[in-house]
Image (cartoon, rainbow, N blue to C red; front, side, top):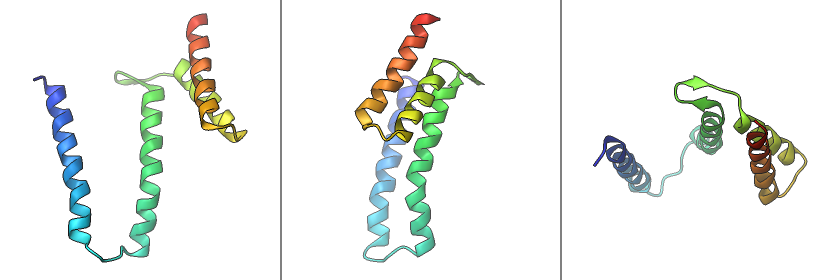
Amino acid sequence: MSAAWLAVLVVGAATIALKAAGPVFAGERELPAGASRVLDLLAPALLAALVATQAFASDESLVVDERGAGLAAAAVAVLLRAPLLLVIVVAAATAAGLRAIT
């Protein structure tokens, strides 16, 4: 087993343990209002960080290429309130079209 797969398994096991620990330790208690607000914002912030990393990182450097243009096209489609499937198609078509040109 390679080191990458071992890391995937360890992270997966840690994720399952953390998800199981929440209900076990919290029980029926409510979270404080401040902690609840932070947790509500955590998932979108993490998703945004992952998208930015995938769109603008290559190995150990930052790049602006077709992926960034696809992300920008998707952002415009979201601002125009397009359906999710159309947003994905617009982003993919933009990135694929620019890759075909260059």
